[in-house]
Image (cartoon, rainbow, N blue to C red; front, top):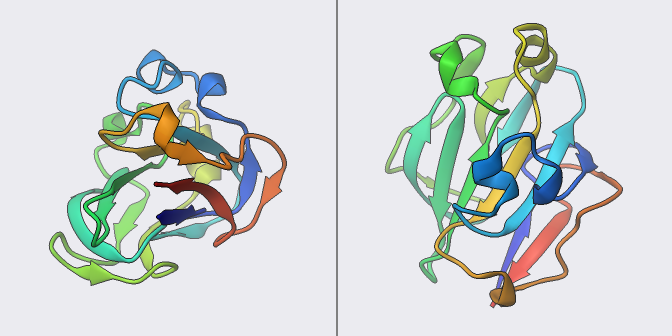
Length: 149
């Protein structure tokens, strides 16, 4: 069982509320989403594992059970070409849960006309394998978002 914790502080809103059909339709996988607090912050790894994909606006960490977790910082933020995002690790690095991966400002993303909402997705999973998915309420960095069997 893998517990996936929140990479940032904010309010859980669930994937269905994400303003992007790829995420709201769970096309990349099930999970939840966080509407982040509007202050500069560091997005941290939601699991212990290896960074297998790393972009300024998104990263994937795969744990020792092969579970890949995507943290996507904002919607359509790829169009910002990395502006406002600072990578704190490298692809291939082993990271611990809670370790800072990307520094960013949700308020700056919002000011650029993009949604700062952050989908946290269990890649290549089905909804049946997730338990205790948090879709409402305030969350702090490190709070449990869902468990993956």
